Image (cartoon, rainbow, N blue to C red):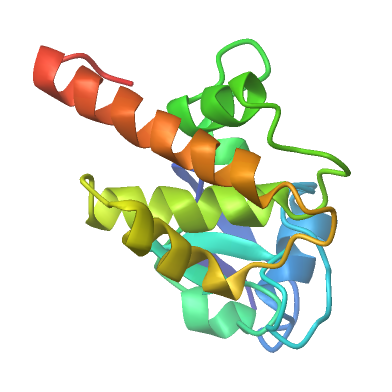
Length: 162
């Protein structure tokens, strides 16, 4: 039995077992490899995606729980040729060292800025408590999120679409 959902704006049907973690469905069935397997216990944030606009740990979320819902992965933020504001900010700030945690960091930050476009430093730090970076690029990650926030605010004021 197929499970219908929307991934990065496209309606899809997943044929994986409904109890399969969303992370595996995204990676194995839809070849969306941005979300990473880190711990499998929901303790590192490497697998973070957005479900209906909120950050979610895809390693803990069975496919059946996203039926009919909207899932956004880091691939849905932009493309190589046209990166989105969050991706541009992470590139500009050189926020990735090994890069393993970065998709999860971007998705948690994106969810924060969707719900709180004026997030301050404390809000950003609190949101990222779920995500671990073992390389220690935390300061660059924070700068990147502030940069993305500022760009999103500018484009919102100017009436542009980011």
